[in-house]
Image (cartoon, rainbow, N blue to C red):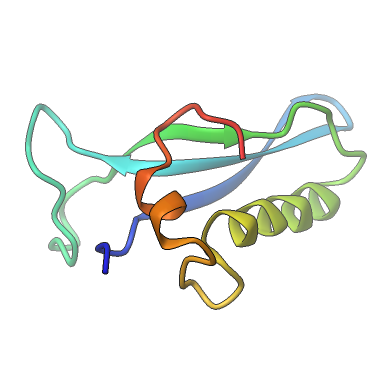
Length: 95
């Protein structure tokens, strides 16, 4: 079974009234290995994984759409619906 992935969801308002969800995945900083359960004083570095192509009219609509994208990626319960796909999805690939 693949190790859990550290994926974050955020919403950006790029223009007034235009909200985009963005999924980001933790990346190693300066060539260091990822530290799951790292001390609180360490920063996490994230790289974009997937983002909305079209804007949403509200922050909440973009957030809900981002959650749906995350569920498609790794399942509603956090377990991969397709383990091989979840483990192997490279950064920048469309869902």
